[in-house]
Length: 160
Image (cartoon, rainbow, N blue to C red; front, side):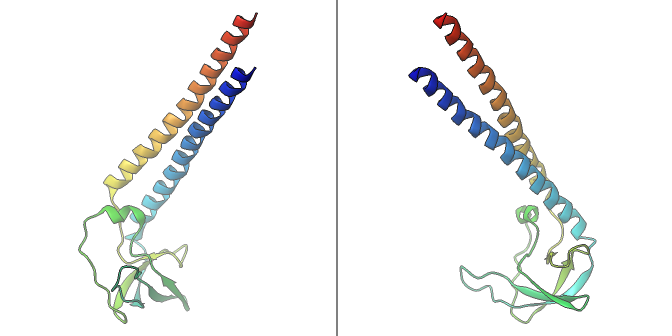
């Protein structure tokens, strides 16, 4: 009886691991698709003037800028979308008070970037990794369930 409970708890741990791997792959895939769609669209977003608020000197400094659209001011710290971080682009030094061009999402004015576009290669790599997580997660769940059922069947036959 102890052996059966031990096997079931081990199977449960493995199932949870593979299930979490599959869920992680789906969530990450959704994030990367949405991010790349924003990256591609950002080149066509309306451009407004913004003003840099923070100095980037120091390790913990974070870029902050403010821009005005439709009579409302918005503060952001997003220089570019996630996938664009993998592009080789010239380092930009922003000084407080400097005027910058801000690309503003027309559907959500609080989402903006200073550098539009994204890295297609990074999107492909992350999409493949997300797909692999889903593939191995679902495959692991199916394999674990089939192995667990086979072991329980073998144990029932040995007991009989």
